[in-house]
Amino acid sequence: KAGVTQTPRYLIKTRGQQVTLSCSPISGHRSVSWYQQTPGQGLQFLFEYFSETQRNKGNFPGRFSGRQFSNSRSEMNVSTLELGDSALYLCASSLWDRITEGELFFGEGSRLTVL
Amino acid sequence: AQTVTQSQPEMSVQEAETVTLSCTYDTSESNYYLFWYKQPPSRQMILVIRQEAYKQQNATENRFSVNFQKAAKSFSLKISDSQLGDTAMYFCAFMKLGGTGNQFYFGTGTSLTVIP
Image (cartoon, rainbow over all chains, first blue to last red; front, side, top):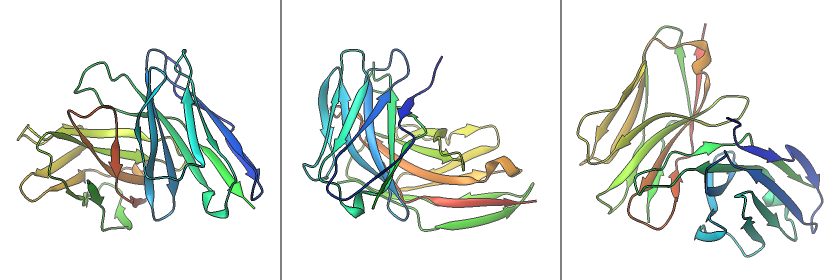
């Protein structure tokens, strides 16, 4: 079974630009969540989607947005990029077919550098 | 709000020795899961071990075991017979049950180096 796939793996942008990152979950997984990882901050939760609906949202500005498609693939978008947005963005999928199901399966991440 | 604290940014251990990584958390929830995730230098995070808060018995997965102290809100990871492949960043994570959806709270991580 293929794992979680994130594209692109690396990208460089300049301040003010926007970026779109893509995540393909494990087949059958309907929950997709996004995290921002920076040194010293650990993983910060961005948002979670389930069946094309955003179920949870972290404490990030509105420049960060996401969506999920009918095939469970998800994208996140960051507009008006700032230097502080440089980070590893991780996508994770999970089954979430029972209330107790919670294990996250992570992709390798998209490394964003903002110059 | 839930918070997860890992007070050891870096640790090292000799190969074949035992090491314990610390994690404390703060929550008012009574039903939740706790996890340890491992992120090797290649960066794909994988689950090491999981503990349900309602279970008193500590979880064990081969060389990995936890010491779960619910009253103290402590969840440490013990790695026995450390191997070079254990070198990684380790994250402690909390997930509450009963909410709508999947929201994890992660600590800032402990970088573990296994020395040959």
